[in-house]
Image (cartoon, rainbow, N blue to C red; front, side):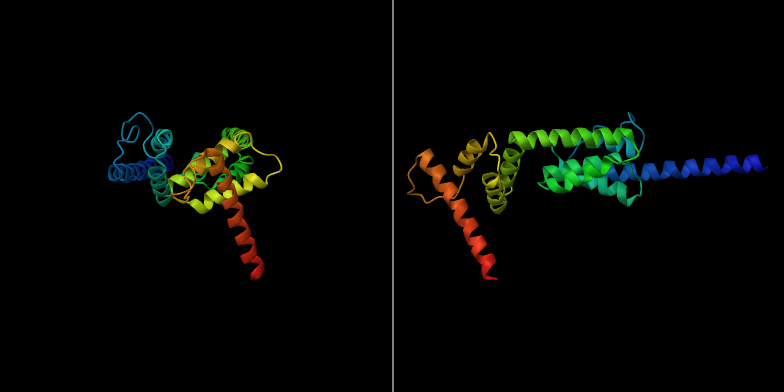
Length: 219
């Protein structure tokens, strides 16, 4: 009798797990539909129902930079209390795309101490790739472009001033400054000369920084 009781308990537990995974799948499909995203993996029976198929979907979404859909799916898994530590890496990549590099780095550094060798390896590679992009100036160019696209001009100023104040100038800083200067809000009568335009842009950056320092000292 004890053996049959154990079997019944195992079957009930498996059934409950299946129901939870199906509920998660149903809500995930609804999220995709509302976002106008056609699922590539969820509900296709090519991966395990629930968390496995959602993780694979997130990999597809990452390729098209659909971060808001990814965030919604991750929060859906969190609300259903169904999770995989791999989502922690996905979240870090989302934060990086949204301009929160510090938060992403902190997450990956914490994953360096994870019990899973796979996650430790993912974190090491992510941090190495990020550091390479930072040193080459590719990260700055990406962050500036993303900030401009979002209309975050103050963030653009902060990024470029930090780069100008750095001990080691980035190899592509002049190109980034020139590119940004051409999109900066200058007077209509300003001479249309790239060199002069670039110098004026840098002067504007310094002027804004000095104003900020003076305001801070006056407090």
